[in-house]
Image (tube, rainbow, N blue to C red; front, side):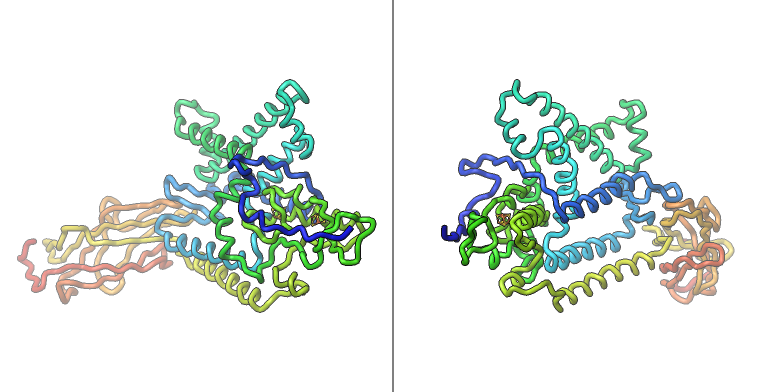
Length: 475
Ligand code: SF4
Ligand code: SF4
């Protein structure tokens, strides 16, 4: 039998998960095993342990990670960030996006297959539970077609969905713990429900959303919703390393394993790579937007190659150019340059984080106020101050004039403040300066923010005085 060229452009015209009538085609991916799946399992369980464990780790009484969007407080690796650190946040976001773009241009969708929580939860948690209850893809299809009174269908489906909702509930609680902290979450769960209606509603909505995504919506998130997936078309090029079928070696396909013609390629058209694909595509059609680079087809095909005593790697991590030119993987100059840029971004971000002060002070002249001439001849100005302690330490704070002699009096407090960890203090302060030291109507002043003998920050402002001051003037 002659090998045949089975390539068809048909796949371009429709989605692999939608039929001609626009109805969803449910994907029943075959269970896979192999080298990559083993490594992915290890990576996934480490990441899951990290995800579930982190909200319970506290440093100096504060969570190690917190994304409290409600109170605009963020903690990363024990470092507290306030809205005032917005510039860092913006730089962090730009660095993150640049990192993802450069990383994707060079290494393709490694993130999707190995790190994305959607893939990890779906493939390593929910599908594994599903296979444990319903069996592998053939049993699952059979169960789907069976009547509700056959094959223990009702029991299997009900127990699967109860477990799915239970896992979704745990996932929802974990995500909520990242937003409000695990202690606050524990309080919501154990306290009188009537006192935490908002929190309980949030938990329920989060749980339903996760349950809906992992029980029903599934791969549609990756193929139709995720913006990162949509960007692949512009990010990938012929040099990008992706999960790819070696068409040079594989074509033309020939099913007959025993008597292969001399012109036959290595692909035996067994469809194992298609059966294991969680997005229902055929990688032999080339790189497609639906491919999340999960490596399942690599493992499936390697298994087939092993059985027919052919070299592994018919489907592998490779760029289109490598396959077309029959080249081995090389770390090209382009990849090196991108990697250097990636490292630079990470270094700059870390330097900015390290240089970030433990205190943030703002001193602004009180609106609508000019100056007051005091009875002893000194001139006073009113200011609004805001001091934020971004550290986890208690700090005694003093404000000192630097370029001019005078007194700083914090109204209602005196001349020194004790700032608690992460405390934000706002109020009014008065600066008094002897008129003899003031040369003009507008005088620039510099204030040092001190903690003991240690200068934490320097802020500047303006001090108003009469142009030609006489002690008898009243303002
Ligand atoms: S084509 Fe292969 S790597 Fe891509 S999603 Fe399907 S199984 Fe995963
Ligand atoms: S698993 Fe390998 S041999 Fe089988 S159809 Fe896919 S590419 Fe061809």
